[in-house]
Image (cartoon, rainbow, N blue to C red; front, side, top):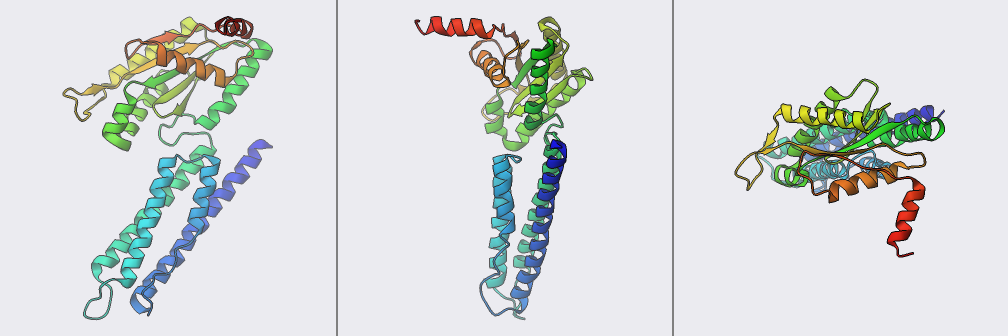
Length: 308
């Protein structure tokens, strides 16, 4: 039932974006007519449907804010180009200049490309696939790992969760922008796909961050799996020419893993893994094992640290 509702919602969102494309096709014709045959110096107002669609997508968190901002910028650029076409200089025959018309059509094609990208991303995300890496998405991760934690609580079916983070990710992102980020993410995702067993799962959980679910594994098997992943990343030989660094920056990852205990929540697990990675002081490229304690032991530890 839930899948049917999700599919219906996805179809509704796609239909809405198709209507946005149709609205802009009508607007394109209206702007062109106004530029060549109109008497007003004001371009027709662009459709409001695209802005409304992006607001809804932002609320549903299916698109990264950067992606939404780029789409908004493309829509604004198209509106500016339309106004320049309608109110700008004319040639001897009273027509808009070729430069203004080319700028408008180019901006319009750029906006259409953004819309096509949004359709592709939305479809993939609705099916639990991260569009950048091809791994499972964050939304899929929360649903799937809840099932694994439930199995652990009810049947004692153990597994290992690992968090892998790209070393120096902020440096790569700030120095090389979106292209550098995408290259780093895709390289690690490729290594994840090559090293996971067929029944294990890999997720993109954030920028520069991946979660691996290693099923029917203990800490020793999990550590071996992460060693294989680290080796695959190293063998890929990816490096980055980061500004203000003399030598290329090699792509490496640092990871931490734990075997969840019954009663653990995904939020607690990720918090513990991130805390260990942030405070370990280990060299980049290390594999860390988090030694989990039971909820009772954790409560007693918290009580002792609080001075009770």
